[in-house]
Image 1: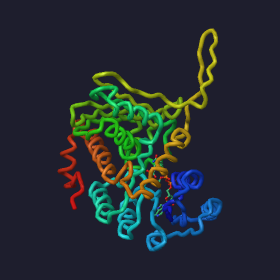
Image 2: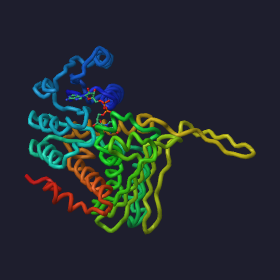
Image 3: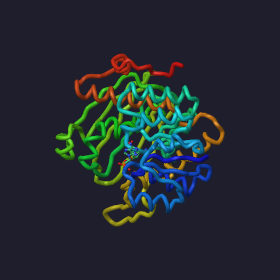
Image 4: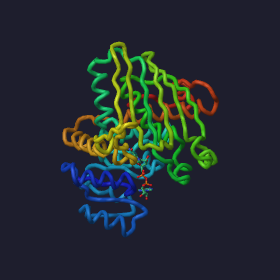
Length: 346
Ligand SMILES: NC(=O)c1ccc[n+]([C@@H]2O[C@H](COP(=O)([O-])OP(=O)(O)OC[C@H]3O[C@@H](n4cnc5c(N)ncnc54)[C@H](O)[C@@H]3O)[C@@H](O)[C@H]2O)c1
């Protein structure tokens, strides 16, 4: 499959490296980024990408390109999904689809109406630790799901410039956990209550965001979820999930750099956990791209499809409103206010 990559920043380069090394079905024939410079051009050359351009439209207009991988900043995703769908190209798009619910709906509908594959970059579903818990839950080993707990903590905050355009902690960071919550539960969230504080860096508060957040979720089957986020966990990149049910509990722990431990008279020490997202989720990023390649090859629906793009944004909107107004917020209220269809209608 001839594929164009849009956006050559952090995640764009991760996908290019992974495709080149581990996804032979995908042939990258073009790379577009308006900030094209000698460094990006050299990176493209090194990865045998024949064409580089500042204009993504050259990718949409190229009849030899079958699919696009959208890795540009979030404010461009919806527009590029719509353009790609119009051009009949299959699409992988990084999360989130957009901050605006109507735009999310419009983009997903465009792909569905065009009959092209749309996969959203919720890479954590492909992480071996989270997938193992998911498989245990789906096999029925924990019985009926009663409680879900997710902890997701970054080792250090991003730059203030990044925070200012991130859309806030719920859209930028917890969006992954919102997706993970509904993935593990196997059903939708109906109500959200959020708390947030500035405890790590006052500059994050001055930028209008919080750096510490806790959210309670109610699922449609009555189960309850809890998610906590921090922008600064001094001990590393902390990512754990737990599902408690009528027959037991499934949970996971963080990967560590190695499994050697040292025991002395007064302590036991093990290796630290990963500090960087791209190290912890290395294989997850590869697996999600292999999954996209399988969907392209077989023409079947992707494992994370376009419809999966909307509920986490609904949950982020509900959490943002809940924190602001100090009250629980139903997802139905968000749907009504935004006047957005929760599912695709042809
Ligand atoms: N799945 C994940 O875990 C994960 C991780 C990191 C980032 N992301 C998402 O990926 C996206 C990019 O994040 P990043 O960290 O790589 O950002 P980045 O700032 O490092 O890179 C973004 C790139 O997009 C380019 N760009 C900006 N406007 C463009 C346009 N109109 N057309 C084409 N390219 C354009 C920029 O020049 C830059 O090279 C964001 O939506 C982010 O939420 C997802």
